[in-house]
Image (cartoon, rainbow, N blue to C red):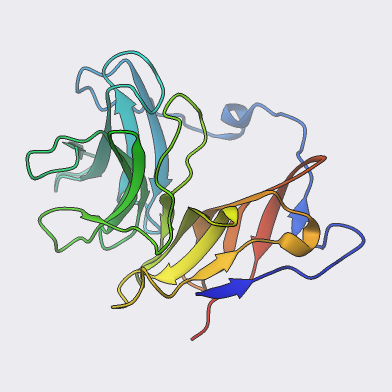
Length: 237
């Protein structure tokens, strides 16, 4: 694997920002549309929208508890061919396993990603648009065991760009860090870039989004707070 480690600096660098005061985001929008997949859900949340605005992904719950031990499912929303009309689909990890699955990322090619729960493990997946089923995407050395009642997601794909590069959270021997890799590469699960920001005293790093230029945004936890992360392409060509 390749490491991207931020240098030692006396203060947070320009690509960090401090938490900002809360604001009424809905008041800034001309239209707010209720998003409810309507598969008997009691709670639903959208997590990703494709660059062309034509695909959405998220997660919904059909019962309690509302945590990673509860009954949750991935949902995907795509145009159904009619003007102004959309179609929802629901998914769990297949092959008769019916594992609870969370949709966290989607791109213009309808490639999807996120995680599913297998007993007490949280396991990342990628579901390529031309594939019938999702596939496990477990990075080498990943420690999959998780506290399902915690809000922490130790391993997941949180972003996928149109070229098939993926990014997210990876928990290995050195704790929770971010990662970026070409998900289509044959050795993707063994050769990947980790983003640890150890030079900044980071205790945890999560990559939340990735664009076509492989620029990333995410979160960095340090002993005295949490910062946002923005960085240029950290992967090798």
